Length: 190
Image (cartoon, rainbow, N blue to C red; front, side, top):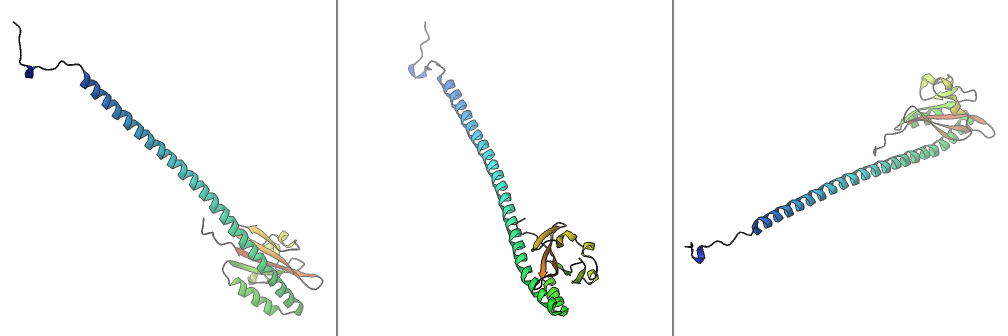
């Protein structure tokens, strides 16, 4: 006859649902992990892109500030040269070369001032803080076109070195040209 088992020992028929639930659960976890990984990678790329953009904007801002600092320093040098040329012109008219030498030597002691000269109309150096330049042609040490201007000018020379020239005027004629060699300080933003 039939094998009859007690009710509590009978196994329910296998319908396959637990395997399907397990597979669905694993697939859901894998999709979730893939989404999390994809989101993490997307954020990492976005952060790198943002960092790169910030670095580029920072470099641009530093360059702009550096240029503004340099422009302000050059404007201050021009403002300094004009009254110095007036004082030197006054001493040249009175024939007091000793005071002119004192002005120039005191100025060249300041930071970044390299050399100061006074050049006559024939482009010969009358006075200089570098004694070996006195009495020699200006073109031996600098570009003689620097002396052609009738206003204060700044010329670039060798890297961050500048030459500032300004005319020294008497009552009704030009007495000479003041030439200042200045080394621009390194900008701390760079």
